Image 1 (tube, rainbow, N blue to C red):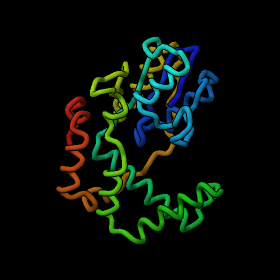
Image 2 (cartoon, one colour):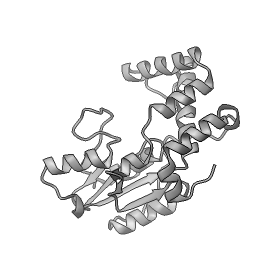
Image 3 (cartoon, rainbow, N blue to C red):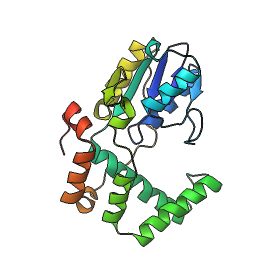
Length: 215
């Protein structure tokens, strides 16, 4: 979540939809008043839903309707697979003590968790657990099944979407920084089976139908 009182916008940051790129591009501009933190119990959580964000607005006497609300969605099958790739990559980095990461206690704990996950479970079980333990995207941008954000952008067209976001909020257009970008690989067809594909469809049906996503 990013909030700018001057430019009157809020971003609802759905995990694995390019939200790190938004932070790395917008925070250095000095226009962001609140950056959500990676702590679910915090007043402003990094990946707050619109429903929880709205409740925080009410507590602070801010008018939700006066802020331009923006979120990004992603092809659901690719989104869940991105979770899988991220945790697998983190496990490998922890195992090799990759120098690109500063291994403080939070990073060490996450590395241990990821490595244990891949050592003790097969890949399809891991994928099933990732699907079960992450919210479907529509739960981030709806309240009581009603869409409450002004614009739902598409990750697949993120550079154009970010340019339009800047125009709509009177921000000098800048190039989007692509943080935490994963590399393509051939694991998708090996890890995904029909059961997992169908499970994702059922969970993400509102977003799939809204954006006409295909496998």
